[in-house]
Image (cartoon, rainbow, N blue to C red):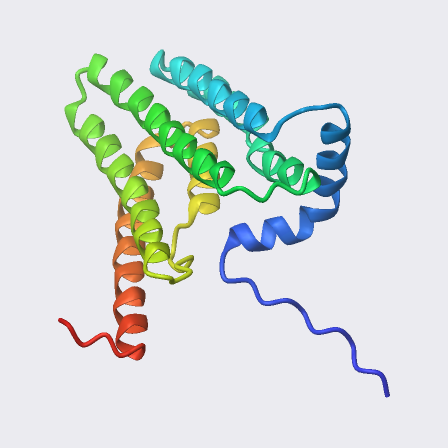
Length: 209
């Protein structure tokens, strides 16, 4: 009796989405590469779209800002697909992409913080700042872990989950509940990742602490 192919295991929502969209993104990446489009150009274009959305958000037009972000979201996968199509082997592309992702996070939460500051709502402005801090720290812990040779993609809110929450809270205008979810979820994720690294290093025999 022939055994069916086992379902792949996904550690994160990002891995799941990339798996099920890989066929489409691969074809699109090959087509764009054949047209001479460089992946770094797509990465920059994605940041420009986020910057435009952030200005719109700062004016209080949350639904419009969310829709602009939604239109630019696929670019985050397409730049990688083009890089694979061109068989890019240098490590600059990944670093460049991660750097611009952090700027994108900053733009969005700065837009929200600016809007609520202008409305005189200092509490939600601070909430936006704490959400930004959590988002940055989630990525920072992963980067530091990779420097120690660990693939640290664990945790409650990876980038894909955070993007979905941001889109949902803007389009539904449930911004304050969304910010609370981001604040709590990101800082829980930081703790999860730090604990993961601690345990992994202990298993490797790191007894320096």
